[in-house]
Image 1 (spheres, helix red, strand yellow):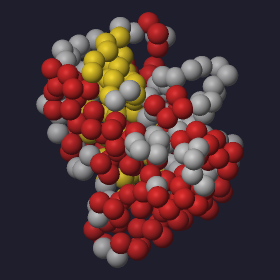
Image 2 (spheres, one colour):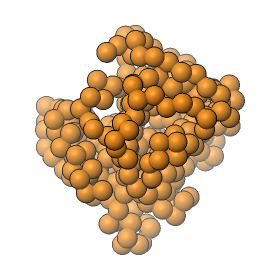
Image 3 (cartoon, helix red, strand yellow):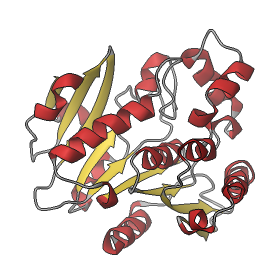
Length: 275
């Protein structure tokens, strides 16, 4: 089904708690202080578990936001599903935004706020929520699990430190998110938005994370996996290590590209069964 063929509902953030929930897939557009927060929602009345999917990089020459990668997977699960678009993508010709937002607004924090209202409406507790994503979507999944404590993040080849990703993507983000700030100022003021460990330190909380990584991708291993492990060690609390499970595989051909549907289904269903 094409994205633009789904029914659409637009609501002001202040009225979100009163929205009628459809049990057919629909696009929910929440207007909050001048920003569009968009979600593809498929609620299952029979399930109290929720899967929340984030998207990685996309090609702006082939499509435009809202971006709901893997939306064709919604019929693969018996659980409720929500896919979210990153409003950062509306700031300019960006292919990846990491939910970063603007100088005054952290869009991932606001997405978490909206998701919690929807969770309350459909009677889903945080410990029944799985955030899934790969690459930039993996970074956003870990951050959202940090905001919605008790939930779980399942991530595949994620970024853990935005500024360690390819500089062309990072520079474009900074150019459109903080045009008035230097790179040094951005790193100093917004480190908790750019580094998952910094956010966890701010909360003094590490969410439950299943971290699936292709060790054949040297860029990921050097710039994201190893710094993430070093950051966890700095917490100096063994309980935080218990919250993070690493699953490594080797696929030289795939590199940074994520696992296919069937392999991803295996990990998601495994987490669902263990809830």
